[in-house]
Amino acid sequence: MKSTLAGWMVAGLVALAFGAQADTLQRIQESGRITLGVRDSSGAISYAIGNGQFAGYQVDICERVALDLKRRLRLTQLEVRHQLVTASNRIPMVQTGAVDMECGSTTNNQARQRDVAFSLTTLVEEVRIAVRANSGIASFADLSGKNVATTLGTTSVQVLRHLQRQKGLRFNELQCQDHGECFSMLEAGRADAFIMDSAILAGNIARSSQPDAFRIVGDPLSVEPIAIMLPRGDVAFKQAVDDSLRDLMRTGDIQQIWSRWFEQPIPPLNHRVGMPANASTRSVWADPNDRPKEAYVLR
Figure 1 (cartoon, rainbow, N blue to C red):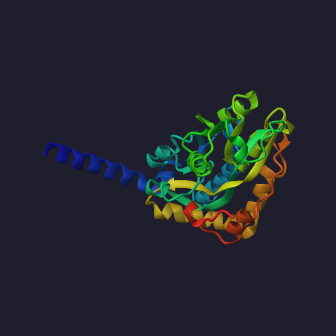
Figure 2 (figure 1 turned 45 degrees about the horizontal axis):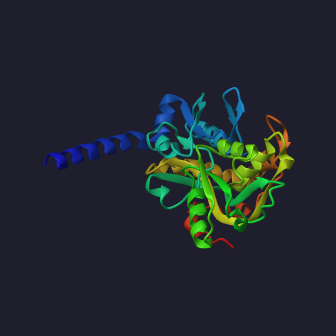
Figure 3 (figure 1 turned 135 degrees about the vertical axis):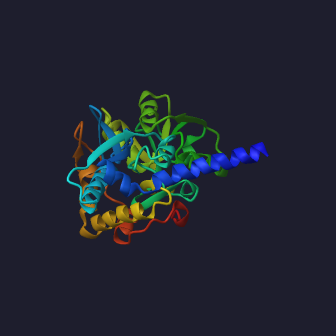
């Protein structure tokens, strides 16, 4: 009986906490503040540029959404805060209201939809392999016996293990706390390959001191729809965010944001990622949707 009563009490506290976080628009309006969850090494999607500042494609989009919310809520001022999150804590940060929108490189999938909501897809990623240019590695099959790094708490971990079993390969899996750590391992030669979303790989390569020393190889290993992570159950907030994204897609502004971060020199080193939007990304801009990863087929 005591355990049942304790369970009811915990459930009640969770429900109260969820209810307190449910009206995000009201909280933003009352506080005059919105908090964006950002990453420090998600390539040109979301990254640190020094002095506690963050930038990138997804950060730029979220800041545009915040500007639309300011107008929608008729606020004279809206403070936009950046809060660093990691692959491991990003979901709890959204669930607890520590961040209002997670503006990193998070895949929308059915498992995560049990805990959080997702905006319309802003880009469709492909999981690929980054290696040193002189490594001799050209495909997934070449990873046998190698040290392969990927980031803890990402869908790439599941992709890597599934393909390892499917292909019957044996290699040493190295898990890192963040993308920057994985790329540093590749740079230092402690990892022979880094498996992750191609935009994250390309962005880290572009921001390295020797971009020509690395390359992305092999066929895509997985397709990943990337979206802004939002509080689950807050229908009004998701609608407001989606309306803003639809406008960016309808006007073509999202293509300009993409070009700024993936086709032009970016800070702080002013290197160019050199990555045009792929066909799947252009497709979701033309036909906005929030379909999860499970709705995509790898061709």
